[in-house]
Structure formats: structure tokens, C-alpha cells
Length: 122
Image (cartoon, rainbow, N blue to C red; front, side, top):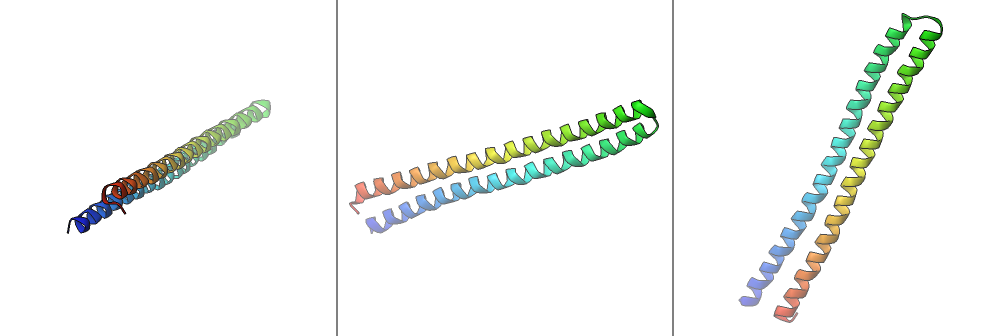
């Protein structure tokens, strides 16, 4: 009876560890979705701002118009590149967190198994 109860306790600990690992993986997935949503939002705003700037530039003529258009395009490209860098950073951080959590889960699982073997001789 005692061995069965302890085996159930070990199974419960492993299940808890598995759930913690799943939660960490799920959080990483959510972060990736958030990063993509933020990127899309930033790019959409940059496109809107670029279109508005181009409309403003159309009222100008000659070199002023050329400079205005190039400035508007440069701002658009900068915002888009910054948004991409931010997205990539968030995704990389989520991936690193997931890897770290997986490693800690594996270590805790091995520790649990070793403690159970030492205590019950299996």
C-alpha cells in the first residue's frame, strides 16, 4: 500500500512538472502572437503615416517635393525596421525562456526520479 501511494505521489509530481512545462511553452506561444500583432499594428500605422506624408508632399513642387518624398519614405522604412527588430527580439526572448524552462523541467524530473529511487530502491 505504501509503495502504491508513493508511486502515485511521484506520478502526481511528474504530472505537475509536465503542466508547468506546458504552461511555459504556452506562454512563449502567446508572446510570439503578441509580437506579430504588435509588428502588424506598427507597420499598418507606418503605412498610414507614409500615405499621409506622401499626400502632403504632393502639394509641393521641384526639389522640395523630392526631399519630402524621400524623407517620408525614410521614416516609413525606419519605423518598419524598428518594428521588425522589436518583433524578432520578443520572439527570441520567448524561445530562450522556453528553452530555459525545458531544461529546468528536465533537471527537476531527473531529481524527482533519483529521489524516488533512493527512497524506494527502484
